[in-house]
Amino acid sequence: MRDKILITLVVLIIILNLGHTADHFARGDFRWPVTVESVPPIIVTLTINAILCFGLYFYLKNRVGPLFWALAAGIGVALGWLAHFSPFAVQTPQYIYHAYATPAAGWLAVAWLAVLMLALIATAIYAEYLWARRIPR
Image 1 (tube, rainbow, N blue to C red):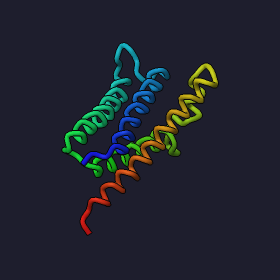
Image 2: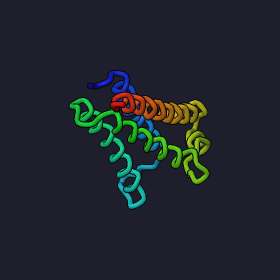
Image 3: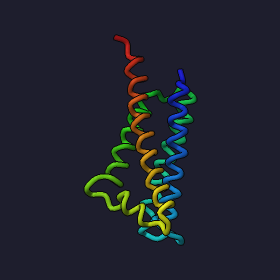
Image 4: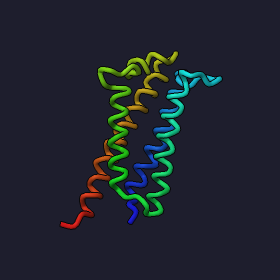
């Protein structure tokens, strides 16, 4: 059975992730014409968006369940933390903020990332709750 709250959270993650992808594009992470340096971020971005969109499609067709979304969102939190908040991160919130010409644009990009991370955390917790609730005791 499909859960409307989980679907809403997943759609929110897809929208936020597309916005975060636009942020990477605006900051010049994807160069045109394509260079060797820009291929890895392009592949990672396409893979993440494909997993999200195909995952939603298969969830709507009852082919995957809440455990898929608990794992996907949990992995998303881990990747987001490693990429932007860990001591090893190159593109920290400060880096993102200063990549823009105006403070408003910098704050928007950082806030967008923060909301994406919160949506991933909420989705991971909620999907885990749904999955655990379905296990017979």
